[in-house]
Length: 254
Ligand code: ATP
Ligand code: MG
Image (cartoon, rainbow, N blue to C red):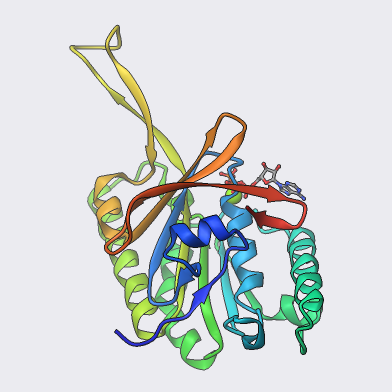
């Protein structure tokens, strides 16, 4: 395997969960969790952190952000970017990009349907070829346009599998980190016929089991009392573990 780069999350604990340095290029990671856990915050944080100059151990790169839900908030990115810039300045790092430059290095796409989403992902390889500084692709969320009933559920599975394959190929061939978010859905295990005693409901990542097999690394965010926790539940090379993280005014932190 050739040398990969890593993009910090700004949480040492979370970076540790992902193998030490954060999100590795060449890998696809799915971040799942219920509303408000911070999935979009992670996405915006990575878009800022991928731009950290190499003098500070960063990748000095650019990002693609694919917004399927309309939850990318520029003011929040500015807040996160400002905090990151201050930190870099306090470490005497030279050539810290301006906020304006940072925003221009986030290539933003809004997709309004699963058709737009699939079409965009199909075009990404070409886009990356003409933008070699891109080291990160965020898709927030992968599931939104695929959650409603499809007339042909087989077609839905084929589209999802095709997307997963393309994203894996992009990660490996273009040496980018792919980070996608996913919602949680309730799975009811029925005991006997109909709803009743003994039935149990659990929260599981949306899009079903075949999607679960398609992704490489999977992280699930959840509450542990008043603390936010991230659990690595699936990885080909890292141990399963759980760490705590925080969301502050400055972004993702320990
Ligand atoms: P959804 O499934 O609805 O998309 P999500 O997992 O993407 O949810 P986010 O929108 O990333 O959730 O995170 C929202 C959380 O981030 C909230 O708990 C909110 O309090 C916290 N948050 C957002 N901005 C700030 C801020 N400026 N200061 C502190 N916390 C913040
Ligand atoms: Mg969100």
